[in-house]
Length: 390
Image (cartoon, rainbow, N blue to C red; front, side, top):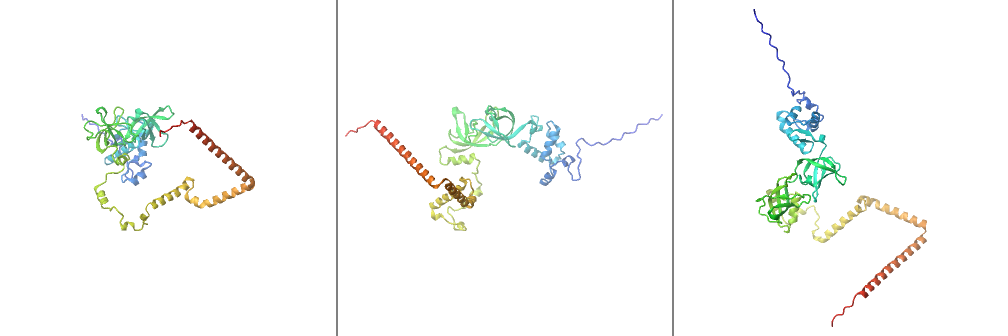
């Protein structure tokens, strides 16, 4: 009895769950439905999913999505992973998305979070200025311990303060604004810290032992922040520059340069070029210009008067052109109006009234003078007479 083996079943190839279905242009079908695909194609040779598509994909998932899963959903190729991660980091910095404790990505707008910039106050509290406008959010001293002035954060509305202002609680810090600060060194009881010259930064920066560069208490220093503040610790830093004593000549300029982050350290090539410039004006430099140096201070006075003349129209609320063009017409109209009023009221009555007003003013002035004279005489009489020895 012959036994027949059952025929082998033919395997059917199935596409993987996240297989890429490409269009004629080479882009994945999911990405081709990007409403801003044309915009991305104009900017980049290999267009990435737009921010709008990323936010829409996260919103449709409805739950926090890990980065690897998001790459699969948007069909990110291996060669695009680095560029895609840079886009995600940029969206995090701008407060469009955020990561939870498990490093999963979610839409910040779905959590009613507000992204903005922190503005500190000398008294310790602060405000969050939203990026998208709207009323500022009050931050209590407790919340301001986590940040410094200028930091960008994401906050959630936590209620209303006693003045009726919306109050917020910081949820996540997007970026730090301060890496270096200028301030004065203090060492009470052997504990070193720097008080920032920027009054909006109310927190002191702690200086560990051996990180003060030998600076003395009261001196102005530049500190590099090595540990940003959080809810449990103050900021810490190390001194990288000792500027000198607070009363030294030119110290206010050195402080202003560093406080407002103005350039003060130039490259060697720029310094060598500046050294080649002469201290006096060369003949070639005066070509095409009117030399008024011989007039001396008179030029400065003339320039001041010219500036005052330009400011006068602004003080009256009229631009210079309107004042020049319409000034004569306005004066003529005003003169005619005054003339008509005098004809209606009667010139004689007006003149008589003006005389009576002038007489009343003279009597009032005389009375004031007499009263003041009488008061001075009474004061002189009350003063005791002092006789000097001969």
